[in-house]
Amino acid sequence: MARFVGRENVRKRLAPLEGRPGRTTYADGRVRIEQAEETIVARPPFGLFHEGEYETVRLGPLFEALEKDYVVAVLLVRLGGYAVGVFEGERLVASKVGSRFVKNRHKKGGSSANRFRRRREEQARALVGEAAEVAADVLEPWRDRIEFVAFGGHRPAVTDVLGADPQLDWLSERAVSRFFAVPEPRQQVLERLPYDLYSAEVSEGGD
Image (cartoon, rainbow, N blue to C red):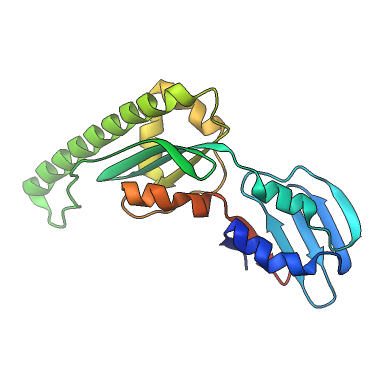
């Protein structure tokens, strides 16, 4: 079963295998390490462009890919809050977070439920609009330097924010495939994100 492992922990886990008998295959953005006792597959978070096959365990191309730093934009949104940031490597160089109250769902029926629903929708629209405006303000100055974009929080909320401002259309074009299911988007959550951003997808025992 695949899991995400911090890049330094990947190195610690695999480095002792370097040069051992086995077969190493680099293809399709991942490396497959086959030994008599186990098979390990690793996929770096921002791509692995090296391709080749080797009759021993060869980890240099994987480690090079894991070591590389990028400029990454982050947009985290849940109903109730948002966080926008830019990372140079693991260093947060620009950010802004915000919160706006959005009522929980109403369990009762009748006219009161309709009023509640309308009020909740108004609050959600206000949050989405504010998050979209902040995202454009924070990220636009970095647009030419941002290489990848990471989304997280609640998928529908992120989708709503992206759809609220045409200035954000370019974010989806640079998005990584992994969605980060973070809790309430706050500054400390944003600051801790680099570990996950640079984590590799690793499976042991086979694909």
